[in-house]
Image 1 (cartoon, rainbow over the protein chains, first blue to last red):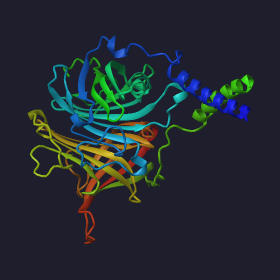
Image 2: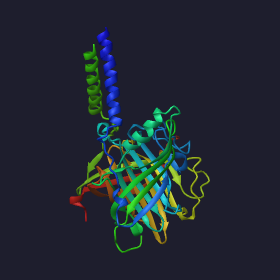
Image 3: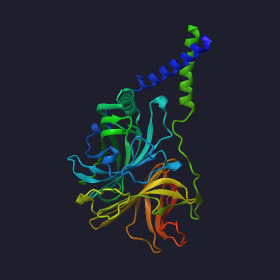
Image 4: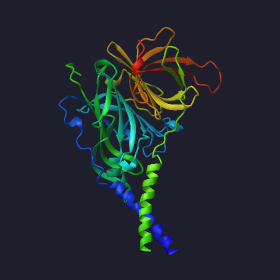
Length: 229
Length: 190
């Protein structure tokens, strides 16, 4: 009997060791500097709210951490869209002025590999900027650093909350340098093909509500066409 | 007994790694694609949106009854000529397979109408529609960009409104019918 108990205790310890190794794995290196932060090209810098109640609408399956907003919005409960979030939000320029409207669809990715530190989300943005035109951004996002640095410490804290400042690039592809693919659809942006990065700043996180104080940014590199975009 | 404990640790590590490796963390529900071969090459697929049941959001200024109830459309003048709609998207078998966004905007003299279709198990496609409808009451648009399954494809999308004539009490008012035509980048239609 004592051997069975020793084996079970060993199993539990092994699983715990494995999970700790997964979370604190020093070999999972951060990508570091975003390629757009060292580019010489001009960028379109847009910011947006990442807290559900600050968006125009946000909906999901209704059982996720982030509650749909407004409360009576149609929820995405059907099986093929249950792991999807849809959001419409105001996009602001670098001075904090309204620049346009952004719509984001994000679905959990089947390419997720937790063993490799990849908690992936396939997402697309549609951004309409009056006077400039429309943009389509497609990207894979990796939420692993956010889970490791913010969500996990929140779960460990007695208050189920995390406070601090966390900055990170969410975009992990499809570009080789971890950039999103951006296509212009109309107006001055029509025909444009370039790269972008979505990043996130989190200041407060709650296990019950998800992001409590957070802001997102979308940086789009402007190709040198000689036109003023 | 120490050896058994150590063996348990190794077994636990291997079991946890094996489970994470073998079982997908995410498994999207797939509906079979209902695609037909077009006579002039490429393939066709039809989607539709039942109105009002599948409308998630209708964002536009000055609405008396916003959808969803409680929606507050931003009052900024810059957004006064934009109308954004979010929908659930259904396939030809009436099963929800994705979500879609339709944006209509007046930008000076230009009218912009864009669709984004997002099918979680397959990918997304961005379509820029022509401002004026064609004869027959449908509007035509062309693929601008796609993600995943739609990335290597070019093609077109038509949209048209079909009113319900069934007279059923619980029938929708009508539906937006979307027909997509896909061709690979190598065989673009002229």
